[in-house]
Length: 363
Image 1 (cartoon, rainbow, N blue to C red):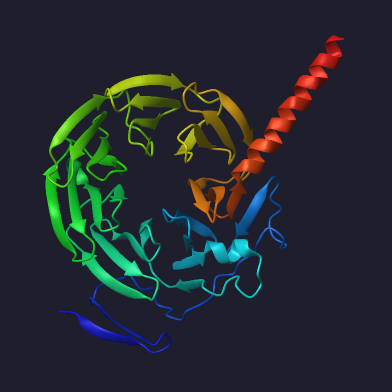
Image 2: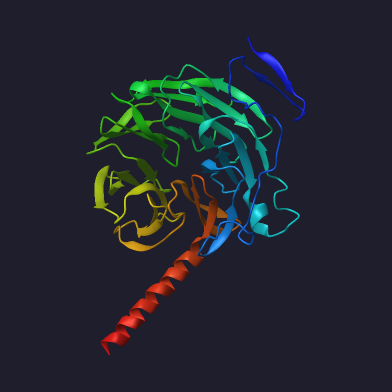
């Protein structure tokens, strides 16, 4: 039986179960504390387009597929919604005008392509679908051992791995389950849809990567791997994939369903992201640095200290109003938008200077 609660300070009415801890005790709407690249904040070196920082410590960060919205979850149990284009515009009247923050207590957050809905875990057995109005759309209960999650490209279907290798898929608009299947023998640690939405991939601690049809969930292919991938990235054309397995990066040919190349960065890695053209791979490292590699060869192009001595929790290439950006965010640190073209240009110049010096020494 749901109890109707009215939050007067927000002027919003919503339905909330008696035992739900989704909404934190404090229910006032606040504007996130923001700093851009020109403001006094942590000094970020390099070609930076924008820096977002809240007063409370950052815990998680997600970016919408269209790059328009960034959401961060902070230590004071709030979700902060930022409209990126406003901040990039440089117009002081626009900056922060469409940002807001609400006290939601959910983790493992996912964001819809339009940035309007957030999906996350209330606890290890309950999912929530919420909006930035704020409003709770659904409570998806009875999901023991919730782990990895992924959102279908249409923004409506959500797939989650449960304890014991079970996969469950919901329609997020209706809150009704679509598929329930035994995907693996052991717990699932990664879930990802292919760009066309017709297939999804899962990896498990049983040392396998499996591909399934959507929405029926029929197993199409299985790859044995030496250890469970920490992360998987599928190219935008759906023809290749990169996995991070321990210290090793592995590329896969999904057209032939075969392994391609392996390479190992010089530093322990934590996250990976493919560029828009699928030619470059960004790799986040344990020390807070990021390196850029060629996907085909694995050769390192350049690297920089993005978040020194901080754990990077978000790494994603986006395009906003024609600008190619790389978003990085670190726990207890900032969200930084790097200008990709300038990054490449700066490091290309650095390499050319080194080559010139070497030539002079030879003479």
